Image (cartoon, rainbow, N blue to C red; front, side):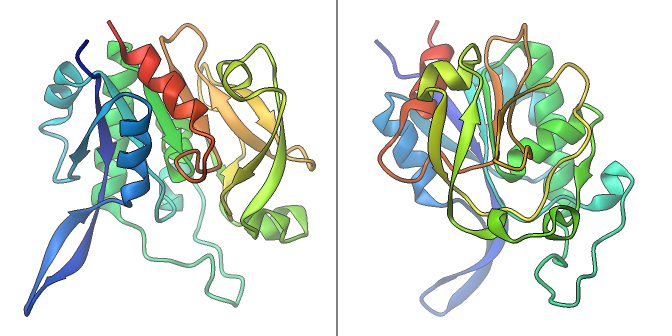
Length: 232
């Protein structure tokens, strides 16, 4: 049986080959390796513009929206936070915001399986008309979300719950979070302070967003669920 083809979003960074330094589309290898372990075949999607988005969607079997730099707060009607530390104030990547927002819209329209990771969950929510908390520590009054590991409670009836159970220790620090859910999305996992940690789009073949990084570590069940949903 042919492996499902899973597209993984990338970002543009300066990369070095010997003495050459060029802008390149890059992706942490953990995403591709997790897809391979789950039985899929990974391809990288450079964020060069929106003209190829629908062609990607027609030819791919699934998409992973990878983590990265926070979205431009202007996309959901907020201003960039200024907490004095510089931690929350990072230059946005509008080329990537535009590309991934268009990719989400096309994938949802085409019923293409989609897993949105960390920043990717924010893209999914904003693309559906939702908003974000731009500075989570300021909103909740603590820094626990800025640590690598934490426990989440999961709805057992959700796709996420069916994949990983009702409680899980997950990996992924974050300083933004869902504020108002986008159209059609439901919350299916929460931290101990009720911050939303995962969302789903009911009625879609597989449209899941998680605040953590399922590609890291040994538990590959969520990636496996995506690849299974991508099979004919």
